[in-house]
Each structure stands twice: as C-alpha cells, then as structure tokens.
Length: 635
Image (cartoon, rainbow, N blue to C red; front, side):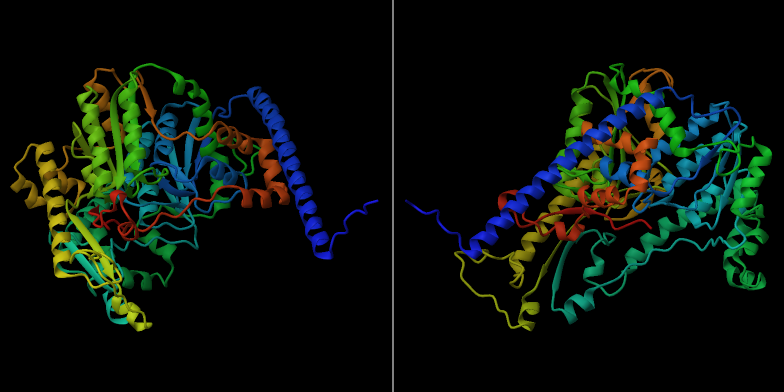
C-alpha cells in the first residue's frame, strides 16, 4: 500500500503561507464587497431622505463665501479623491472652480432669500490677477444689487485683498495684517551648478531675444531683454491693481502708490502692528475677531440657535449644491447652446488628465463639440503657458475644423495664455482677455543637455561607431557636434516661421508686423490688445455671450451653456454624492478604519513632469528634436 508523500518542512511552510494569503485575499474581497453594498444602501437611503428635506436656503439667510483652496478653471483632482478629501475635511490640495464661484455670486445677486454675504477669501490661492478681477467684477455686481457684503480675514495677501476690498465693510483680525508690496518675479539660475559643478552642458536653441523660458539653464542671471520685457507688463498689471483698490476703497491711486514707498517707516510708526497699519492706511474699516464678526452678523441677520455661528446662514458648498440640483436635468438636454472647453495647464502630447492640456485629449473634446448637433458655438477657455508645438498644433487644427463646420469659436483667456497657449487661441473668431491676462510670448525654443563631462567625473566614458557622422549625434552622453546644433537651430527657426506665419494668417496682418510684437515677448492683456494680438477686453461670460450672439441664440438665460469635459465614471459620481451626504460624512469622519482604507486605496494625482524633462522624452517615429512653445511667465 502506497504511503502518502511526506512534505518537507520548507514545502509545508510555503504551502501554509499560500493558504494564509488565499484566506486573506478572500476575506478582504468579502469585506470590500459588503462594505460597498452597505454604502450603496446607505446612499440610497440618504438620497431618499434628502429628497424630503426643505430647500437649504431660508429667508434672510447670510451666504457664507469661505472657499478654501486654489482657484482653478477645471478640477485637476479626480472626483473620487476630491469627494473623499472633502468628506475627511482634508483641504490640502483643495480646488475651487472659477465657474462655480461666479455662478454662486450671480445667482445670489437675484436671490431674495440671501440678505447679505460674509466674504472670507483669506484661505484661497491664486495663479494670476485676471481670474481675481473676474471674481471682483462679480462681487461688484452683487454689491450693486443692494446685497451687503462683509469681508473678514485673519490676514490678507495682495490677491485676497483685491477681492476683500470689494465688500461694503472690510474687517481684519487684530493680530492679522495686509502688506501691499508690489509685483515681483525672481527665478533661480543654474548655469554654474550645471556646467561648472556638475559638468552638464545645456545647449539652447531659440528664436527671439525675449524668449527667456530656458535662460536659467544657460545663464547665471536674467538677460537685460528678459528684465525689460517682464518689468514692462508687470508695471501695467500693478498700476491696474492699485487703480482697482483705490476706486473701490475711495483712495487716491498716487497716494496709495506713495504709501508703499514709505512702508517701512509707516509700519515702524505703528510699532510693528500690521493690523493697526492697515487701519491707518484705510485698507480696512475695523479690527474684529471672528467671534465679533459672528456677533455682528447675528445682530444684523436672524439668530439661529442650531447654527454653530449663531446666525442663519448657508455655506458656499451648500448653496452651490442647491443650484446644481436645480439645474441637474439641463446636462441631459438637447437644446441648442454654447459649449465651453477648458484648456488649462501645460500642453503635452497624447492623452492628459484635467489640469493639463493634451494634444489628443483636448482635440477630442473639441471634436465632440463639432460632432454634437446641439452645440452651435464654442468658447475655448485658455489658461496655459504652452508646451509642445505639435500638441498645440493638433488643438489649433480642431479649432479650424469647428469654424469650417459653421460653428463659431470664441477664445476667453484666463490668467495666462502665452506661447503655446496663444498658438491654440489665434484662429478663433474673436479673442477676449482681461487687461491683466498674461499673453504673447510668440516664440520657439529647444534645449538639449549633454553629460559627457559629468560621466567623466565618475570615470565613465562613451565610445563606439556609427555608419554616418550624424549617427548618435543627439545622444546626451556624447558632446553635441556643431552639425547637430545646426540641425537643431534650423528646426527651431522653422518652428518660429510656422508660428508667426500662422498668427499672420489668423490675425490678417503681415508677418513683419507680427514679428515686431513676437520674438518671445510677453504682454499684458491690455498691451496685447493695443498690438492687435487680442480683439477685446472681457471675461468668460462676455465671451459666452459673444458666441451665442454669433449664432443668434438670444439673451443669457435663453440658451444652454455646457462644459465638455471628463465627467468621471458612474461609480465615481455616486461615491462622490455618498461621501458628501450626512451619513457619508459620519462614516468617514469617525471611522479610523475607513480613513486608513481610503488613504491607501484612492488613486493619487500624479505630478506633472517638468516641461524640460518632457522635451527629452522619445517622440513617435524617433525624432530627436522637440520644439517647445512655452512661457515661464506669471507670478
């Protein structure tokens, strides 16, 4: 009779580990399955309960506008991560869409249930002054409608203060402060570190003496041309900023500018008290704590014992959710309207996530608008420093295709629409920009580092053979031969001719006139309009109304406005709704296990590769040269 084969000790251990892993896997899958089932049932119950609730906005409510995070054109964080972070109260990396903030301000203006607004912008971050001025204009309209705006902050930076200043009353915490210091743009320069210390030789090829994007890699300080161009547009933006503050605060612009020159002496006279200094300069109307602001609003509004602040209020998020619920069915409507496509971030080839611009992914959105019969006109909202030339050209071609299909295209420039950002804009039927938009930078550059000296420092040498003298010419471990540099420069010059030639054709002006305002130079929106690169000054709403008028859709409110963008999977949308519900917040706020599982399971937003790193990535077809239309401009 055969005896069963005896297992060795090692085999027994391995089999035991395998069985334990199988058990653990089945256990985890079962827990996840039943957990999702529980959340689904809870979500359905929450939805039924929420449907029975009364409207979230009661009579004589105070709208509390206290968004936290970075003001963006489009979310760059996926819906699942965004909803989970919101439920857990994690504001790191939080974002507020400009369109949402403008919508809330516009609706509150005519909402009789909203009696006043508490404005808290001291926890917002901004990337430029064009979007700030657009919000400021919406606040001015709200104030003009008769709604009282009370602004409060623990402290304000310059961008935050421009919004706070739009209020009827501006209050600052006694321990806070405001410093209007001017605009500055300083960068690090790496030539000595790269070339002298590390032995990296960076070869720069460009057209245009003002195309300064890659200067930090080949110089130790900014070129005179870069300083001249930067100071020119920055002074324009700064003078407009001072004029905006002076107008709303009823101050003299010259005296306001002069007060900055005496900043040190004035603060010393206030004994270093920045809050007292702000009050003396009439930048604020009083000094109050958050508790005193709550008492003030309770006195002026309606007391509410159930409210944490003591007065009847509705938050920004709750008010926005209420508006979205009211208009939820509009997204499925086939009524004719205007589509908006957002191009925000660096321009790169292929498919790119929201928060960046993909040559293929953004072109696909434009193609969707072209093929949608309900879309009669399109607004391309551009907030981009540019990037890869070919990816920019892919998007530009779709703009042209839309126009050929009989659908007008209007560009609305945000904070920044420079270099490649201008490339994708130039063929629009009309280009709008804010006076403080940063645009232009019509120029091309290419850069390639070579590292043979770096390798020699550690005893590594490169050698071999090639069938021609150009074989391996662009290998960064070898010195760049003069002939290789000549090829690179020729490609860049051709790219510049393409750029200026296309601008010339799109703007219907001679190439020589375009070249005179190009050569990589950056302009403010107002300066660009004076030079014919922009058609008119205005914000996103102005551009949408223009597009609607071109196809005779009627007045605002008579046509549909739809954003064409990635909407997330059905599960992401359901999960986002669940975690925002009362039950979802309770589950994720008070469950350490849920917090830990969520932190590990949700996808993380990958950091974008730096533009210069992308320039070294292999291209389809193996072409070693990549032309870039990029602008390291802004604040």
